[in-house]
Length: 285
Image 1 (tube, rainbow, N blue to C red):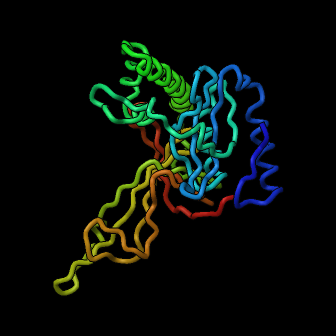
Image 2 (cartoon, helix red, strand yellow; image 1 turned 60 degrees about the vertical axis):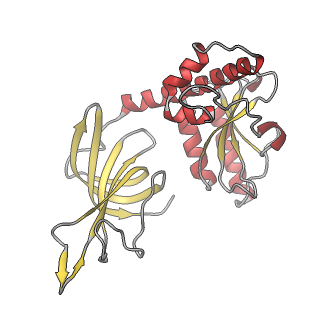
């Protein structure tokens, strides 16, 4: 399978990415035997990279959409390789193929509480229901039999992703001890909460001025959990409203930290969190 041209990067950078991908795929099974995960290039009407599953078991359409990744190829490959790391399937970069990738409607739920939804949506929101479709639902017509076959393909994706999530729970650890300095962290935002800083909120005449802060929860490539606060430098006229001049962090965003101090470590259930302060942001290396 020929490697397609990756838009927006140099030839040297492209060669380096494909070389790293070849190393990642070493020891994995042949895509003709077990299928493969496809990172599909952006197209004019869809600027983001997407993740798909190819299965050699289907008689007709054999490539199915899983999820959107990123507009950046580096972040895309980081996300895809993390999700699929414990799978025996290879990870390949391919062009979009309208004939083979457009939904024929065979992957749309026609019964039950998720009637009208796609199986890739059920994979993300209710994998238990996906399992029921794959192994408990009784097909009555050939179209429903095809539907069950596709559900089992998505179920295999769920198992691959579960291996990755289980591994992350096992290796989740603190980044150090209170007071330690940490450097060169690459983190992915998991959640963002905005709240008012009660100590800085003030009234000028009859006008309230709110200084808000973003409470971030993030994760590194090994699954270690990190939290820190970013205080707004300018005031807002509305409570819990970030001023437009401030950077609003988003779920899925990659954050580069040049250095920080560990303010505290704590556990919530089986998850270990490292809280940072004195955070200095950096650039991707």
